[in-house]
Image 1 (cartoon, each protein chain N blue to C red):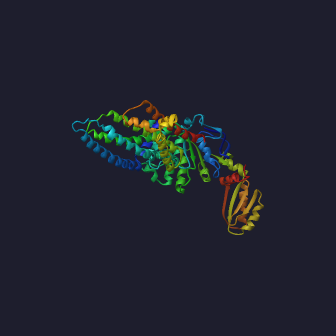
Image 2 (image 1 turned 90 degrees about the vertical axis):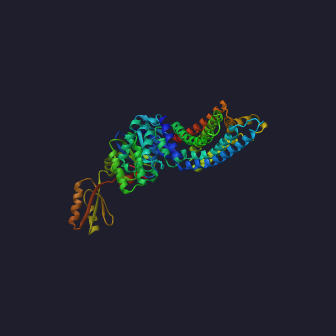
Image 3 (image 1 turned 135 degrees about the vertical axis):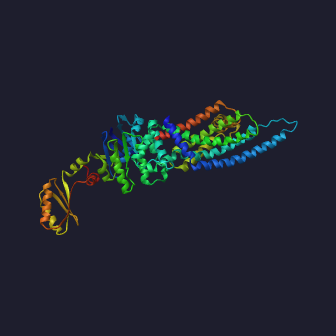
Length: 309
Length: 254
């Protein structure tokens, strides 16, 4: 659906992105991840035809973004970082305007506006001025704007930024509902968002892709098939740490003050042994949590200097 | 075509529902009605004096009253149109709604044309309001109508020039303040380029005389439609809309 080849963009002397290559298949939900200033927004702006790259090419649904910008734009719904809303328009009028601007069939405008209002649960505020809405609602109007032309592809640039926790979880639910109907690219630097909604992750740092894979594969690869065990005990913590270090399959034990962090291999036996050991020592086990390497750890590993995979 | 009209409709509505438009219309009408009334009463007195036996009844309503009225309308437009057009593109950039326009399936030409038509629509409403004055005068006395229409065609074209200039100024910047000042300066330049040229100015002087709006506008006000003036005004409008189109397009390859 989207093919990016050798894409580079320079702002003056500074390279924002450098020779990016990736593809997104139809129906996929792809998380575009990276620290601030990594080049996420730049890449998205180029895909949407907002700006031209310095070199390289982008194809969307078989159309080249620069040869055939109108065809590409017709197929993309784009939510920029700042929702592009007119403060002196009513929500419904605004969506109708966007639908017309996107060249939607005249007979479908009304239905599409109604369904966009429905999907984003904006019906209650459809008759209000956008300028009077709260930030979260404006963000939702921005999303409704991206949805209103029923595009094949949705490009969402940090859709949850500036929302309160409840609105963030609503936005995630909404994105999950949209999966299957649209191909979605969403950028963020908030990790749980990706974990919650994406099939595939592209991690970008300083303008280059450092990882591109499904979430599972990524965590398997990065941890070398291991897991981490988090343990809390009531007594004899130091003794327990020393004892665990001797268990086969345990790679590293850290005494983190009020808890013990263990890096182990992927065998369930190892976990069993660790647990048995703590109980036998009478240390008073209060908590034991096994987790595969979290996205957060992967992210930090990949984006810290010299940490690329 | 549809993209152009969608944009034009949106901008026209935004302009006409903005309080600024009402302030401008109200203030303009205070000036116009005061001057029109005074002009008309003076005209009535003088034509009474002229109609004494033995005198030729040679006073023209067009030359004595409408000319002054249209000049006032025009004078205010030089300053008011930039205030109307200042937001057309500058505000889109400031509010980041420009992103929406540039990622929608519309061309830069459609954006420039739509914005121009929206602005011209709002100005046309002001022109129609100013047209009420001579129209109302018809209730008290007959006068030849066609020269008046010619004068208003001239007013419309010159206003369209100011809209195109204001749109171009608005495309250049994110700052509304800067946009209005630039538009004003461009307007005054178009007007003053032909001022104060003596006989000795020669060919350069003739060119500048032709470039200035004054000569062309005066022709229309006097009731004559000249082909070269029509071509000139339309070219200036087209030129500034074209420049706007280039500025909008440029954001794609910068």
